Image (cartoon, rainbow, N blue to C red; front, side, top):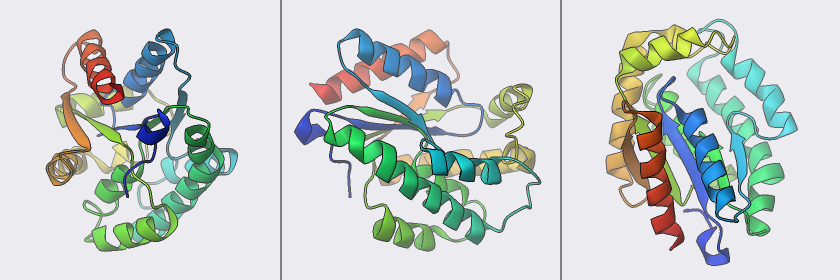
Length: 213
């Protein structure tokens, strides 16, 4: 099911891509752009975006790469997403506010469903049963995995569990996101994220303006 924002004048937008591709920066800049036009977007993230979901986030992004099996990861991500949906996303959309999220269901489709095992069917089944919504617009930031991984590890955020799977994993992720863009061409747009951040932000702002129009 697609997002339900446009009929009430709000958009549900997700930013996706490999680790270190600049999603958080561009999500923040998009929120600033929309605020400058008089809109009141909610800027959020996954895993997280609500108190319970933030508790689960620490279980997922910290620690040893082999801490969880892919199946366990799927269940943890879905639990966090359900809390995020109930407490942040749906209330905002119902109030007519745009929602901009740094990651949503497509990350689980790619990270756990496609690259850590042939589990896409399981991901989609649980998503349909307990989430039941996808963004109106998904911006996939696409860039060289080696550059992105170097950038991601340089942050030293302590949330490096997925970066620690290594470069080959990041290449598989990139392939997965590109395949997803081809699978959902009406919702997903590939963005060249290897450019100057200002140029990327300008392109994103133009795409969102077109959707709002």
